[in-house]
Structures are given as C-alpha cells and as structure tokens.
Amino acid sequence: MSETLGQLIRELSSGNVKIVDLTHTLSPEFPTLQLPAQFGQVGAFKIEQVSQYDDAGPAWYWNNFSCGEHTGTHLDAPAHWVSGKDHPRNTVDTIDVGRFIGAAVVIDASKEVAGNADWNLTVDFLLGWEADYGTITADSWVLFRTDWHKRLPDAAAFMNMQEDGAHTPGPTQDAVEWLIKERNVRGFGVETINTDAGQAYGWPLPYPCHTLMHGANKLGLQCLTNLGALPPTGAIIIAAPLKIQRGSGSPLRVLALVP
Ligand SMILES: O=C(O)C(=O)c1ccccc1S
Ligand SMILES: [Mn+2]
Image (cartoon, rainbow, N blue to C red; front, side, top):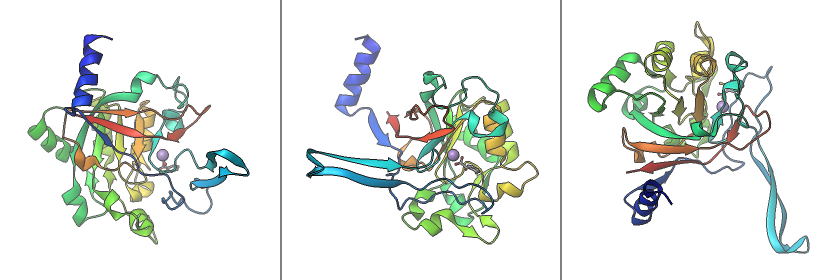
C-alpha cells in the first residue's frame, strides 16, 4: 500500500480522521418534492419484505424497494436539467468517478435561515465567508448549511409549502453564477429538498441553481444532514451515486472525512 493511503488508514483507525454521515435514512416517511399537479412526481421510498428467516426464505432476510432517482439524500447529475443535456458523460452511470471524492467547504447560514425561511445566499455573504476562511478552492463542493434538517421528522415543516409553493432557502442567481465563473466549484449541496430556493420557480431565470450548475456540467446534492459536524474548510466528501443506466441522479450515502 502507498505511504499516503497507509497514512490515511492509520489516521482513520486512530480516529484522527473522523467519518461523518451526511445522509438521511431512506424510509417511506421521508418527504419528497411536490411539483405542481400537472407535472410528473418523484416516487416516495417503498419497501416490501421478501423473506426474513421464514418459509419464503428460511436462512435469509431481504426486501425489494423502489423510489425515485431524486428521493432522499441524492445526487443530481448534469443530465437532470435540460441545460445539462448535451454534456458528455452527464448521467450517474457515466460521470467520471474522480468527481465522487472531493474537497468540501461549508457555508453556514443557519442563523440567517432560522429567521427567514426564504433567505437567499448572496455573493456578499460568500465574500464575507472567504474573508473569514479563505478563498473557495476550485473544484470544491460548496455545502450550504441551513440546519433545515432539524425540521424533520415533521414533513410539512421540512417542505414548508404555502399556497404559492415551497418556502425554503437557496442561492441567488448572482451567487450561482459567481460560484461557477469565479470559483469553478464542483457542485452545490443543500439540506433542503431542492438546491434552488423554494420560490425560485418564479424568478427571472427559473431554478437558477439547477439551470446554471448543470448547464456548466456541475453536480448537486440534496437532503444532506449533519453539516454542522463539518469544519468550514478541510473536509473531504465521498458522494458516489448508484450506477443507474442513463440515470439523472441517485439516492446515495454521502460521507465526510473530517480532520
Ligand atoms: O433535483 C431535484 O430533485 C429537484 O429539486 C427538482 C426535480 C425536478 C423538477 C424540479 C426540481 S426543483
Ligand atoms: Mn434532485
């Protein structure tokens, strides 16, 4: 084994490098995105026991499950959005595997969001973060901490739907453009069910995070949790989607290596 990998294994075994699970449990109770009724809907997680050490399977326990590609903690591939449809290797089965392990920075806006569910991440807020923690390095994941996961298990509070749609935080169009053009990030990760703000469907450029990030061949992570256990900089995340043929996204286990 190389010295570097050997050192990593030793650091993991000693606990000097901790592993933090950023993933929600996939269950039928986990809320799913609600689009307007005229559109197709993502499937909730369903599970059906096949056997559990019984007549159907005396020595084994197993289930069948079904869900949408965008159910629970999941990754959005560039092909998920029409703006990303023409990129090569843009589906979960074809994305370069080197994109599944990478550095992550955590932008903590949990206090701001606690006071305003429609709070938007701006370029000014990002520049203020960089003044404290340094420049966001190219090809990093940018993880938007809002503590929104604390609204679970109350699905209604997590979705925060009102008569005009969801009211959840997200980045402004300017912030998305800045992250892409000025910092060339790997992708954007959130705790909410949508990388865009809930009200972004009605913005001049609807869903700017989906549109621009996937248009720039970048990735999204949704329904993350435990971001509060990560430092602002220095974590590495492993986010490897299921290898679904022509998949637009996939539920996945997201793990952070934290020094
Ligand atoms: O990527 C998603 O799961 C997501 O948020 C989404 C999916 C489909 C349509 C609109 C949206 S906004
Ligand atoms: Mn998605």
